[in-house]
Image (cartoon, rainbow, N blue to C red; front, side, top):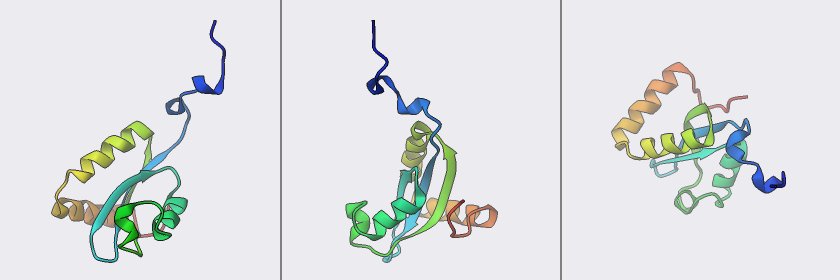
Length: 107
């Protein structure tokens, strides 16, 4: 018999929404990542504790956000975006800016 403990809970089964984001760093470079808390993650990046890459390129700001993904799909989307050329990432950002993301965090 197996016990129903916290170890048996799979986080993928929980209804947690993840975001894929692109940051613009102070040197103009782009950084792609995922999170389930946009405000906390941006605060971590700007405090220099979220990523070695962004730590030396502060401040950073969101220029692109995709929402409503589960963790698995967010990781897959992050990987796909990271494989894009800089030009393709800028096109993605420009296309989304016209549609939904205006630089402010979603509610």
